[in-house]
Image 1 (cartoon, rainbow, N blue to C red):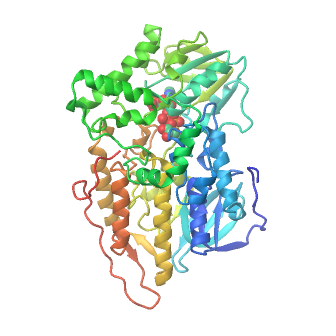
Image 2: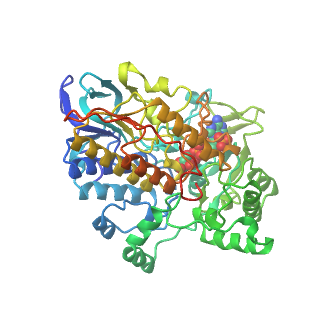
Image 3: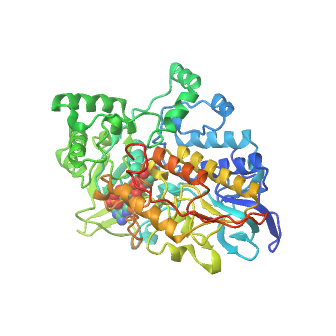
Length: 574
Ligand code: NA7
């Protein structure tokens, strides 16, 4: 079945659809959650999705050069042996169209589309305590009444376009990379300005430069990047993957970031300068996020990190011919990997092209967008035909807070999270019974290879719902104390890394003016997190209040444990 809508609202406004569960979003998370609840638990479920096809974040995020930074053979579901055997990736890092094809393949194989309502944006969800139901509304007037509300809204799906004065006055066209037109943009012969040099900008720039007449890259914060060393997968590699699915699954489910490689146990200063340089060189050639796995203390020891940072800066200097441009590109204000570490295909080489310029908007910020182009505070104006905002996302909380979610007694999620997101395990919020947030703030999410984090969350939620239904337990709801304990641990985990050195990152919400500065993802590592969640469930859902069982038996509330890095076993995070 081709990508596209299959189920749309046909109900007259006012009718209410009763379901066991409603899932918001048809990306990696929503698809698998639908499959688990519908086919494993036999529940009546619907997915509601704003886009006209499956993909979630990948449905919208289709800018030039859009590619995943996780290796394709690990950027996959691992729950189905058959699916693993039937699907074959073509490149080391999958490009946007291939990922969308994969998700359509999955949706078709498991006949998921018949229970997905496309082109429908959820606007509100309100808990009715008396009925123990969630009432959900959409922008197109649909109404649902459901027992379980599961958000699968993605972490990077709400775009962030800075409020540049005058943007509307621009005579040319402007686009955000995360809302790229589905039929593409012809950049031929155009003067393009790209704002932003995060992972997206670094991927897009070489592709835009190859098409456009001229590309001006506006850089506020210089960034590290490691060559992706992307390539088509050989027949041998594909066979190796096919023959070793079980082994690969074990690796991705037991590494802190869910990637298909182990982090070295060696520390940076365990070896001498010469040997260290050779090791960096070797990992540089391998490329991608594997570079970070060369030593285990790169992300936790500043002096160790400095050696990696200097190695990368020297690489940039050796590539970029113009010394002024090289100086701007290497004037990096944070340790390596404390912002999301980009990987690239020819990013720094792009600055050697005659049609590419780098403009420093740190010393002279963007003052306004004029009818002609971009105006800086120092009075310089750049005339452009197209502006590309590679300016990132209102990450992690944005997609949830865009929905008017109200729990018990009209408690608004927006109020509970006014000073930053609060969750227990990134899975639940106190006051919002039977609502689960897949890859919510406080879970490893963006610090992990996403499908790995998603599978763990979906399976935990499915097992939990199955337990509740088996025992006739009407509600599960965490408490404020459980959230406080968990957030203390989330902060402890972040502080054990160097990430707090880079306070201006989207991990802290710092890219969106006015957003509370709180470190949002869990940096204690996926392995540790998986074990914590497993123990919580096995110990009778510690930290969650369960309503009495159907047979009247009272279920005691078991308080959440005191989580600490020392008390939770597996090794280094991030
Ligand atoms: P990021 O990593 O948030 O990058 C956004 C970029 O846009 C970054 O370089 C920002 O500079 C820049 N930016 C944002 N606002 C402005 C203004 N007002 N002026 C100049 N420059 C600005 O988003 P990406 O889309 O690249 O990556 C997000 C994730 O998607 C990525 O990590 C992958 O997981 C997939 P700053 O650094 O804030 O100075």
